[in-house]
Image (tube, rainbow, N blue to C red):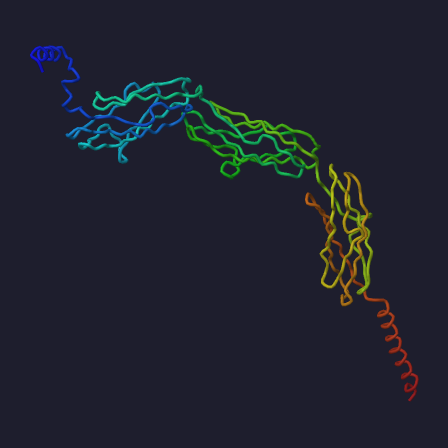
Length: 382
């Protein structure tokens, strides 16, 4: 180094400036900050986790004070290493230490690119940039993947919704809906029925919504406005239920009589009526019976191919009683069913003693009386 250069360096030192080639061998030589992701894009309310290395390529131990400069207003951050919050790291020669920097982007933030710097001892700097991909808001979101469902009037329409609190405070939401007359709704946060739900800041809550239409609802499309609200924020969810029609059926007899008499071993024909009391056609109506042991029940017809809405089909049930059936009352349950609906009726069938046994009893009694009369006439005068 020349004398002239030495004087120049001394002058710069006295003025508060140190040329870079002068401190090439001092305590900051070889210290580098590194992270692979120096510019990323996130939505409002997101948390960014940076993994940053402090690399020491010098021959001395470096104690580096870590700081963050120029953090945008309203943003927050935290630095940790080894599970501890830190602001200084000591790095061995030819070694590196890692720390994490968590940056929380606020919910209420303008769309754009924001810059800040991670610094070691105020000399080594790592510029970082974050692009906020959309305009931030202070609001609540109420969404579902399926807004429309279709079924019959007996169905339960279950919607799976998500309530997101995109505010900076914990919110308690009241859950409500504008239901047509006769309809019922149940809100189930975490599968438990409730009328309100509490959601942490920038968190979501899954809510199941069960909707039941009235029994005699007409076919058509019905809108169900749903709302989650409190005094400071709210969100609406528009659901739609399409009713195809009601599936209803009634099994009875022409006179409504559900009892009959039968003799053991004999058969009894019972006239049945299967009525379609719903608003849509029923297909493949199957008839079955649950009868006492050793009894039999057959149907004519066994199956009704199509039963139109409002129509009635006639069916003959032939009941055969067991030959060993004792006198008394027996119950036979007859059911008409389709995959959509069913109807059943219980018939009380009384088993009577055959007439021949009645006449035989009368003859035995008469014979006994005649024998007594004969004995009385023959020996009564002695």
